[in-house]
Image 1 (cartoon, rainbow, N blue to C red):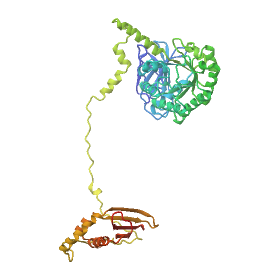
Image 2 (cartoon, helix red, strand yellow):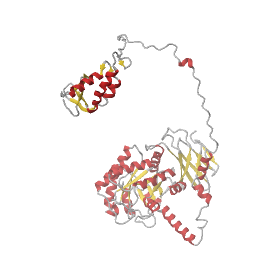
Image 3 (cartoon, rainbow, N blue to C red):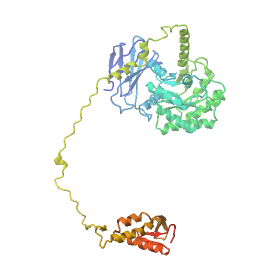
Image 4 (cartoon, helix red, strand yellow):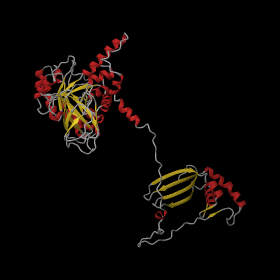
Length: 547
């Protein structure tokens, strides 16, 4: 089954309830709506509310569980529900959770935004500034939202939009917003926070955070709100490099993120310069182009004529910006595809908080029509979901004991002993074992204990001697030539007079005798050749004597 459950949020005071999947007309009990559903596997459904003329008014979001995660664009669902109560048409559009993006489930948001761009008409996107405002935008039924740089600076820093926000702060705010909603979010990437390498890093960071789109602009640093005075833009070449870097970052990550290329050259230089720039931005691969702070309807019309086929964005700065405020129908007639409302939410929130604080100063609570009930607040925040999640873990978790499988020892033991057979070409020969004969004082033939005590006094003089260790390679190069104290030979000769056929005591006596007589050159104790041909010599000498 493709559609097994739908969870609909409310529009006004009325809820839309579950409608079963079907390709025939069925009745929706909550609003007596006839519906024809051609459903497809998906993770979400968007209900786009339209008026009788078919113009998009706002979207109503819903969540469904899908049964087949492997499919993408097959059987795109389109359902029209005629609701008698509101005389509206609800266009139900399934959104894929697996379409494009290269970032798992969040990549589908970019694909969803691209489908919005492909839909006819103009699409409205209020700007949010935190997770709560983004959730309110979604619950109000809008299909997407912008993250306003002006509003985020105000909410996060309590400061104006003058380039004070860092890349990390914007990314952190955006990640929280994207995690809170299921609709596409377009983030404000400012000027990319540096050179072209920073632009690419910014785009990739926005992709990982879950943004569906990113705005990159051509202002110098520090940048500011597009409707502030005194702005400056970078050169044409630098502006083109930024957009090219953003497009490359999108393509290199195999992402569907929508690149919004913005120019502020209208206020910084001229309309003609801004038009030239955005046309080049589109040629470089930008998905949407945008000129901020256009000053008249004529300028807006001229903008919509450049780069045919590339969607245009309008910015309706509420409260007295440079751009005239036009209705959605007027904007659609001009040729705009997306419309941003950057200040509506932050502006009314600021005013509402001021009004509430003015009343609280005199002990007055906000009016009932201005203050939602506590239960409404909890519902807006989705408390039911979290309570249900808690209930899932209330029952004790019982772990079944693990019973080891019986082992059949008959199968584990080989029936016949394993015998290593030699290869025919080889002949096994017994390994030669070197026999070391050690003679101790109790078994040594002709051992003279008294005579040995006399020698001990002579051996004690070894402590003042040195052992020279010299290793010479086959090529005559001396690899090692060092001297070490010879005192350790005294206990060796005392405890083991004869070792491996060598009379250590006699060898040391002769060496000491030679040195005591004044004969120079020392006494060679060891002179052998190693396996690799090196000559190894150990010589008993006077300290620091060289031979």
